[in-house]
Image (tube, one colour):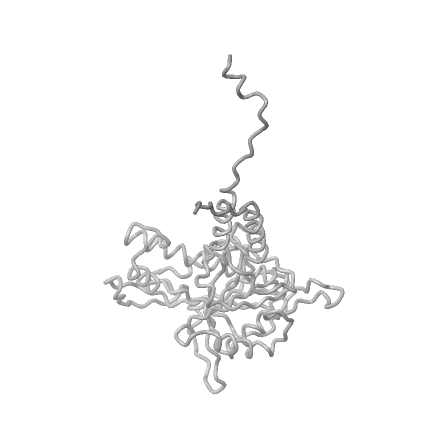
Length: 154
Length: 192
């Protein structure tokens, strides 16, 4: 029985944790590769409508976003849908300038591939969306994408 | 000289540092893939251009009023039947005067001639229409066109449109079945 006796008396051996950083780094790299940096902090509530016939938006660097929805701070800004460009609320008139700016940020060869993604809350009325679309047409940003969640409606 | 062993670096806090970085990235990044319905807006119209006259039989009018009700082809319609109606409208009906005209067109990518419907689906909405309803209608119409593409693709290549890999085939199908949805210039159509 001496085999068992030898183990007695010794304290629990410390677990070797030297590979723990490696595991965490692996996780870190996974998240770094699969995710994208958040670009703006949303000031409007967005509950995107659902659709089934959706396409993926490719090349995120070539997408500029326009957010439309009721403001988060409804006690400050009311409940009517507002347009958000970058980090601030904007008016319909600001859209052409926004498009020009977005275009100036891209490389010459990429300019015609810029897609404007409209992220619009489902309860928004079409009036404001139509106005935005008209402005986009005037600005020459003709490729648009109605952002939706994938899923069955009804 | 006695060889001195290099002192071991304490790596115990390495995990903490990595954790910190990990949490930073978890908070600042998003994972969701952007999906949506892609459409092309028509270029702005110049004032001096006359309206292009399109024959009545070639247009399927879809109206959405401010109460999110549908008017399809001047009859009250339901969203569930819109897809079937669109497919029916865009298909070729030889000799039927009530359906759109069609033209024979040679499609280079497919190396074949095909009857192309001249029909256009005209979508019109009120300023008071909800965006959700608008997207539903857009989705139904998109799904109608996708189904027609699938059908043609199945017939020609035995594969669904989404499974096609060859660029030439995809282009050919897209040419054979163009997405003919026109959005009218905005105006108030009101409605009760």
